[in-house]
Length: 445
Ligand code: ADP
Image (cartoon, rainbow, N blue to C red; front, side, top):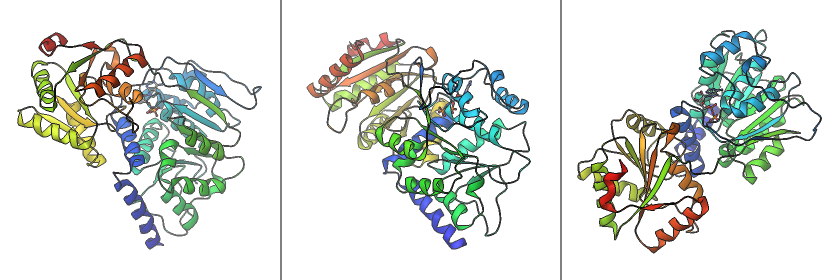
């Protein structure tokens, strides 16, 4: 048994070690965003609800008082600093918490409060007088499982009778031993192992089955099958809830196969450039001119911090070397480092130890650093086809202007190709990008 467990552990290790595998990188970026975020993401769209039975009651709540929660759980929620439900919580919580459990697919941009809603629903489902696992929550990576479990531990601060466990690498169960934790957070491989191999968890006793970050989950090799194998063993009346930050076809196809007769709640992402971010471009003759412009710009910008986006790892590390040689203190965040290292780099940057952070696409999207006043597109974001990548542009420049502060985005244009891309971006979002003469840089302040 032990051997077999090692094998599974090894698999999970390999999965989290595949940094070049983009689904894993994406899941790690999502983890980093969660760890570093401490405020809700605002979204002005309406929550959409789709359900097969339109006669089933639909109401949203404006306060946690209106929800059927125990006093201890409510205290836990307030203790976390949540004054009132977030937008997605207003609509999703009444359905998640209903006495007659609803199966649900929740799709909402990350940062809008879905984890908190799922965790609250899981805690609420537990009957702490019964000592067996009643809720399973599957997540794509080890880090995300621990992170989400910690939210549950915090929220259940006043419910010490609720026991929370982790089905992840390093956690062992022996044959014949039944897990008594009420809620288990885990990755699909280990959870499968505990259910099938060790019979430590009885799937028919599960009252609530949650698939969090399902979009990342299905993108990782093997996870989809593992989820489905567990899912097949559940009792008919088990409540199934799936969360996905994106609404692409594959994620939704998977969602509909595992969640029977679901209520779908959806909060569409806002895709506008906020008014408090001013966009500029500078024209550079060549590579030399380009990094000189950055160096000059950075020398005069005395306040705040700056994130520079490059298109590839190579250009990010090249630029870091150049800027460091110029005497700037630079943090590099690149796909080659582990998730722990990335977190360390980001924490240093957050603490202001470095003023300039250079990165290629993936990592910084979704991460908030309040003091970031300038974002530079050293390379314009392009899709594989070579066309403009509008969403990445929006996410990149959205790293500044957080919490209503003013932000500046500067695009480095080094030829007709990048100029064309910029023009298309300008047209797409309907917001002007103004020319910045290099000797006007002082004006940015
Ligand atoms: P998501 O899972 O959608 O990324 P989270 O549930 O992690 O979002 O919430 C994002 C941030 O907002 C977290 O720091 C969380 O503690 C906080 N948060 C969640 N719900 C509320 C609320 N109702 N009021 C205030 N803050 C909240």
